[in-house]
Image (cartoon, rainbow, N blue to C red):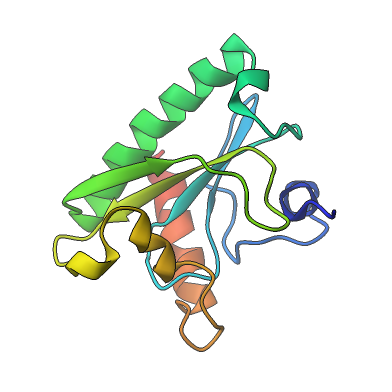
Length: 145
């Protein structure tokens, strides 16, 4: 199976229209795409690993720092009610370990709360945020990092 995350990491077929928000020793922080939710971030492990138990201590440590900074930036930029952190890594083409860092808007309808928020991801091109809006948001977060 083709790993779409590895293709994105290599630059061969980027998933996000925006620039990488942060590059650490072990992780990238990217904006998920396509989505209707501005600020849907994804921490993506640089190496291909499919299970959390395969991570080394240094990868977990850096992930914690990224999550802490990203959630604070999302709150400051979007005034979200809270942030969701999710690691499933089981979608077709996306078994590569990655962690979703998702702002929960204050006005999020009940039918989209918790894991149902994934309805806002992998939407059609017509429904998705304009690529320029995602790019501008990534640049804002990158500058504030």
